[in-house]
Length: 76
Image 1 (cartoon, rainbow, N blue to C red):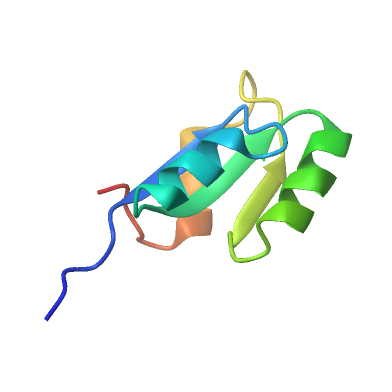
Image 2 (cartoon, helix red, strand yellow):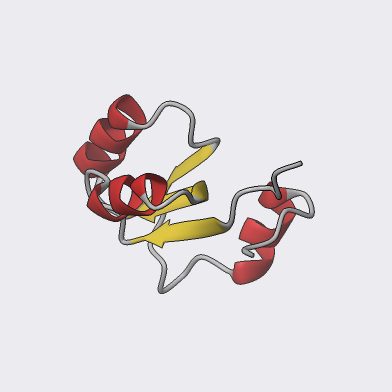
């Protein structure tokens, strides 16, 4: 039996270069966040399996909001 994949967050995600690298390394991306609306659209297109791709300013976005959105999923 294989263990579940390790997980990560992609902050300042842009079009998804970090997500791509982490997925190639076997990780699952829980969420990706960027304040640029065009980057968010491209990331969503490139990685439709990432459940939460958010257009947010991380200087104002509270960690508690992300925690609630992830509904108990944790970075492992």
